[in-house]
Length: 234
Image (cartoon, rainbow, N blue to C red):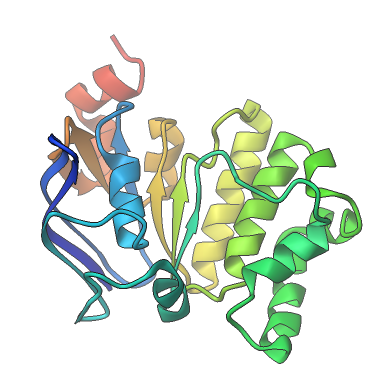
């Protein structure tokens, strides 16, 4: 479904991503792991058209999307849940969700809103509240729900557990698996490698702009180097 081939990303003289290749099949959950500064977010921003790549290619459903604008990519079926949630705090929960469907018809949005409320009943309860009054976990659910309103074929999640309690982390990860069961492919960037590897099919591990390891998540959970560097085993 989505393939990066020898992708490079530069910020001025600094090469943040150095020839990364990865692929994601339809209906998979794929995790992208690594320390801060490894280049994970840069890759997500390149896939969504916010970062321009300096080399390589990105294809989606066998079509090159190099140079596509962010709104064209959203319409094509690629949507991002950004790090830090980035909800509109002064707008209501319902208004936030409606903005997520700005490229879709009113009929499509009404239909999708029913599904979002099935996945996130708390958002229906909080519909008239300003987004900024929600808890951190509820705001993350709102950010995911807003992205789902665009009807993505693939959803990119950037650190969805950041700043959440362990209990809320588990709730968010259950939601990610539920979204995947509803035929949405997932690319997950996540610091909590243990949780990410438990729900994903495959994973890539980045280090200083390059892919260092890749494989089935079950195998990577058993990998001694992964366990030492990312799972806290010594």
